[in-house]
Length: 410
Image 1 (cartoon, helix red, strand yellow):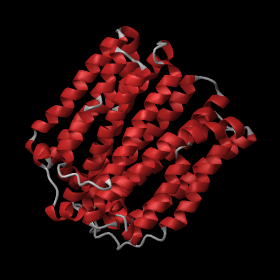
Image 2 (cartoon, rainbow, N blue to C red):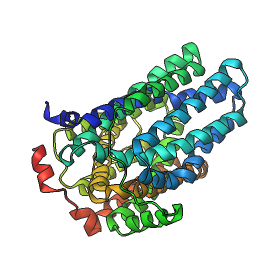
Image 3 (cartoon, one colour):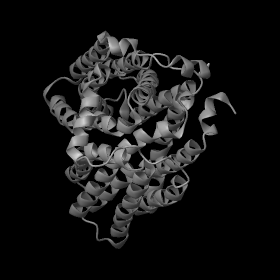
Image 4 (tube, one colour):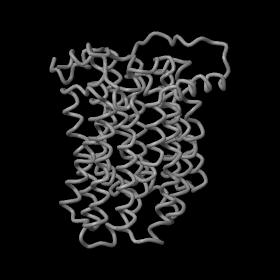
C-alpha cells in the first residue's frame, strides 16, 4: 500500500474513516443551511446570532461531561447514539421547514440539542483514533482525516449554497440527516475492546482526575491558555473584521474575501498531503511556529488588503495551522493515557470554545471604536508573540516522538 495511506491497513480505521468522511461531507452544508433557515423565518441577524449562540453555549456546558462519558463507555457507541439524536433533531428542523411551522424559539431549542450532542461526540472522536490504528500510522491517520475535513470546508459551502438556492434549506437538512443514517451502520463495523475504565466513581471524581492529568503537563495547559487568547483573536479579527473590510474596501471586496478564505483552506489541504508522507519529529515546536504564521495575513489585512497578496498570506497560514493541528493531536494521543484521553481533550475543547463568543463581541466593539488597520496590526503582533512565547516552555520546545514511530514513517 502507498506509504502515505498506510493507516488504511488497519481495518477499524478504514471503517471509521469512511463513516467520518460521510458525516463530514454531509455536515459541511449544515451551517449555511441553518443560517438561511433562520433568515427565511426572520430576516434579522440578531435571530441568527441567538440560534448560533445556543449551539455554542450548549457545547460549552456539556463538553466536560462528554469527556467523562467517552472514557467510561465504548466510544463508537457514544458516537452512534449521538448521531441518532442528530438525525432526530435535524430531521425535526427539516419537517418544521417543510410544513412552514418553524419558529426561532424551536430552532434555538433544537440547536441546544445539537450542541449537547456534539459535546459528547468530539471527546469520543479524539479518544477513539489511537484505538483504531498502530502508533506508526497515527500521524497518517490524523492527516487523512484532516484532508477530508479541509476538502469539504472548501467544497461543502459551494454545494450547500447551490442546494439551498435551488431547493431550500430544508432539503440540505435532509441530506445531512441522510449522511448520519448511512454512517451509523458503517461505524458499527468498528470492533474495539470495551474500555478499561474502573466503575464505581462519580462524575465529578472523574472530572477531577481529568483535571489533574491536564494540569500535570506544562506543555498542555500552556498551549491551551495561549489558544484562549489566540482563538479570540482569530474569530474576532478574521471572522468579524475580515468580512467587514471585505464589504467596505474595494481593494478586497466580498468576492475577493471568498478567494482568500479558499486559499487558507488550500494551504491546509496541501499540508495534510505532505504530512501523510513526512514525519513530524517535533510536533509542538513546529506546530506553534506554524500558528505564528497567522500573524502574516492579519497584518496584510490591516496594511494592504489586496486579494492576491492576502490570499498568499492566508495560504501560508492555513498550511501552518495544519502543522499545529496534526502536531497537537499527536502530542495528545502519544502522551496521555488512552483511558483518560477524552476527559483531557474535553478540557482542551472547553478552553477553545469558551473564548469564541467573547472574541466575537470584543472585536465587534473594537471595529466601531478604533481604526481597523490599527486593530489588525496590533492583533497580528499579539498573536505572533503569544504563539512564539510558548516555545520558551521546555516541554513545548523539546517534545519529540518515539524514535521507532518516526523511523517507521521514513
